[in-house]
Length: 237
Image (cartoon, rainbow, N blue to C red):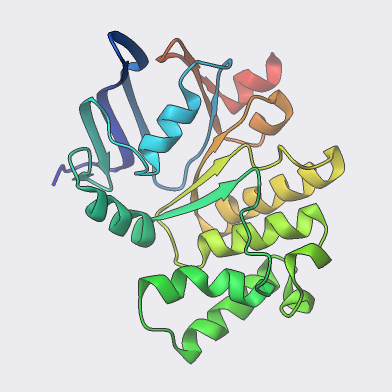
């Protein structure tokens, strides 16, 4: 256990991929911290290390070197099973491609993490309906994903991501498959989750208009943190 006020703390994190005799350094000594309740965007050109960093933050991969503390716990050396447990209990994910199950209803898609994590109860159904109402999905609980618009599908994905009360919500290009108007809608949803519910959000994006919703922007280049930019500074660019 590492005493810290940070929900995320990375200390000198490296990720090196070996391809035959060749080594590719995807992350090159990353050090950063994210406070509880923050809304942070991670930006950078293709190959800057954004996706690799997101995979490590999401406990989908382990660093080759350095430490990753999640809520003060060093998870960098955890086994695959331990990482899966952390993902179920502490993390929520929103992806560009929604990743909804096509043959299950909106309600069933949202309840999936609860079924995986523990015994399901009537209290859980009440919580699901409350989250659906918060996200404007209450009229769609018996609909299937193909009966919904792209924006509605992403709302379902967001509802599924927060149903377990995660410590950290990770959003990877969440508007990548949406038109401009729907992207704004979805970003307002995420902003409300952060500002009204206090959910800590880390967003990966390559779009300035999307990054502007965050309170702080971290720019990566060649696997390193190039700079931290506040919302006020970013809006002046």
